[in-house]
Image 1 (cartoon, one colour):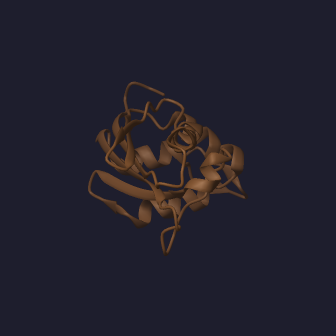
Image 2 (cartoon, rainbow, N blue to C red):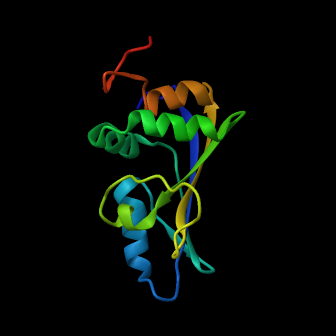
Amino acid sequence: MSSVYSVDVEITAPVNDTEVTARVADAIRNLFPEADPDHREGELVATVHTMEGFSEELHRAEILDTARSVFFDDLAGDRFTFDLKKQAAFEGRVNFAVGEPAELGDIHVVVTVREPDAEAYIDYVAPATEDGKPVDTE
């Protein structure tokens, strides 16, 4: 990723009594390979400064339009948030959580974009598509 982008990606995931903490950490790392989750009071917390691995998974899974929709739906100023299903993340898949949270809770992600701006970063992470293929908007 170009050094033009300056972002803070905060990832939190509840760890329930029935769950193995290491598995929840693996779920986070499956989608955010740069993450090094810390255990804090019933949850794992990680901060990364790139969504490169996550973006690669969006491209691979061909869900860029879905991701863009989710990101723009909750965009406020320089920040957007989204939730991911833990079970899918365990399997290395991106599955956005919408509606009621899963029984074991979802992975919550808050992205704060400092440079250049949130819309440009979303375009980078999940570019617009045409016939399912990313289009270059530059």
